[in-house]
Length: 188
Image 1 (cartoon, rainbow, N blue to C red):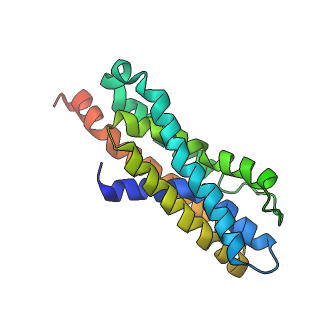
Image 2: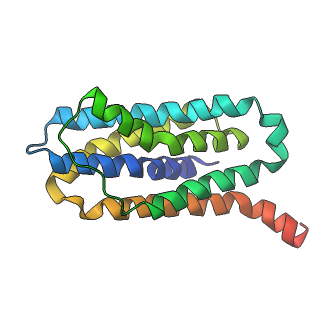
């Protein structure tokens, strides 16, 4: 997997957290740097940790699933992408609470898809440490910008961001499965 593909995965995974960050930005009267940093750190750290967790869970089963790795990666990325598109118009509760009690569930909820991607990255033999840093760093930056963006422009772009992220994940999943399918269909 190339760096560009990994960056697209990172951007796609950050879309849920970006959407929540935009909503958090909408809710604050005045956007401060600390609001941006809190969202960025919560979402970025969780997006970085979850692929590691997925990787650690999947390494126990790697030899068993090696022959169907492209199918697993396709299924996980495709499912996450479809889910992001389906739930793109879901409303996220707006509040100005940036406490641990509020941010922790949001960070976990928006990073569950990164857990599945961690499993996919394992079977694709992508260096998980580097991938986690890219995913976490990308999410951190997107969310910091998202809070500011939300405070400036409103919630009209939340749905589009989630739809874009889902579409990119679906396209990457098709790219992963295509060689497997072409061998099956065309016998090559």
